[in-house]
Image (cartoon, rainbow, N blue to C red; front, side):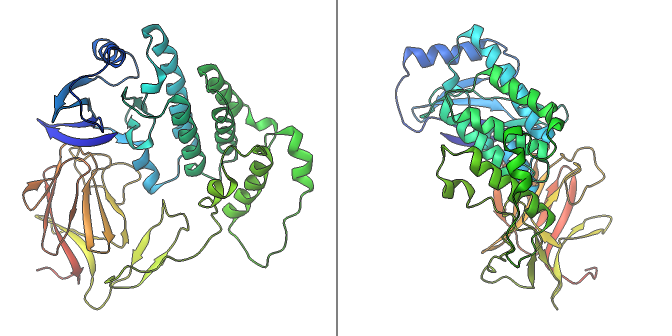
Length: 385
């Protein structure tokens, strides 16, 4: 499945394309597609279809929405994030049954799980040409939630573990998902683990003295990790594959990219939420200058998010700017700008960026974001030009 983003008349669209060319489609897929297209199923995004380059595409309006994968780029998922997703997913599965929709067509990849932040509502997509089935999709989603959830939230970790367990079986059915959520609300019954049969062993177990001093978050996650190894005795995933990337005690600093000026240090060990802090050199540090007011916005770390949402690093005083409007990041080829599916768009030197499009930045480039004009300076000394 391939996604292409398009902006048209102030709206942003996601087009899902079949990976194989073909002059037609079988009757089963056609019937499923028409059922979604012609009916307003609550929780399912409105669908338009068409043909391009001899391939069927499925078009969805994603204006004002953000995918779950984008949220996980700059913070760990919270209990509200996970609970909202699972509740709305279970309700949608129940609504699909009267329409005889095949669950295999439900798109559950985090990259395509779009959320309306102002209403905390997901708009699920339907794509009948997926190669894998519902069970595989749910298993992958469960693992993603387990890996990206806040490890300090004990109740949330218990919820993601329960969801992972049912996805490793034949399910999950909507009733099983609701059961997980009921357990989440009643998690106070067992303040340490939430699993009474393992509580005594957990309380008696002593942590070995390794000579290291992990963070408090690492200690908590370490206990949960040992508990999960006991729970997953059947090993639905290879243990090495499951845990290699989940150790928050790993404090190794990644190597600097070639050509990186200034000194870089890491604050967080988790690569998904890692911030690289840029200390100013003799030539100055990167910054944005707002044209007109002359306000200087120092880009003291990357990725740097501009928007009106609470998780943004800089919030312009404009209601036309989206909650997460654009991102400035750094790679081996220098600084880059990405439009984050903003409602009113982003322009670089007068050229509009497509939703989620990434472009290279150079000193002196002009960035237009919903009516506000900025100048990017890669080595800014703080003096007005």
